[in-house]
Length: 155
Image (cartoon, rainbow, N blue to C red; front, side, top):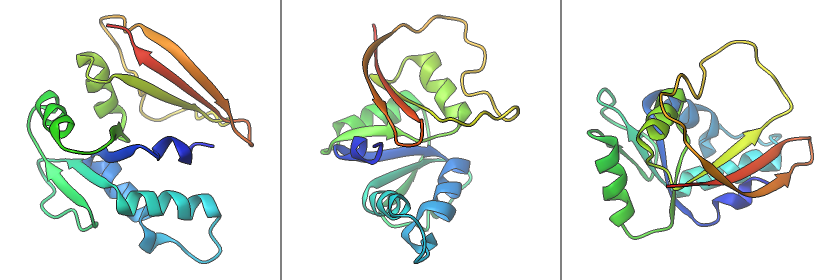
């Protein structure tokens, strides 16, 4: 259900920790013959797409089609939007998501609701000073009870 949302994506942006975790778990090199098909599909997508790791510490991304960028997030996004390609998605952790929300840098949002609840860990939204209004666009149901919600930013 969710892999088709990547059909028009040319760039994935991640923070350093998310990038390193994705590289370890989701690169094609991490796949084993008995892994489910969706894992191979997602690994193939990540191996071929342009990946941007936002980091001041990492020197070598060590993953094909990857580069490291640092600086102002709004400027990085503006630079990436000017490059030829498709949509840009953010697969970052809570700090990156909070920064994008706070600075209203996203055009639309895709929320995955999984039928699993964790009682601890980082809070993706954190405290927000201002309200961000979103307009509902679509809902997709997955085979295992997951939901994919799509919203656009209201400016």
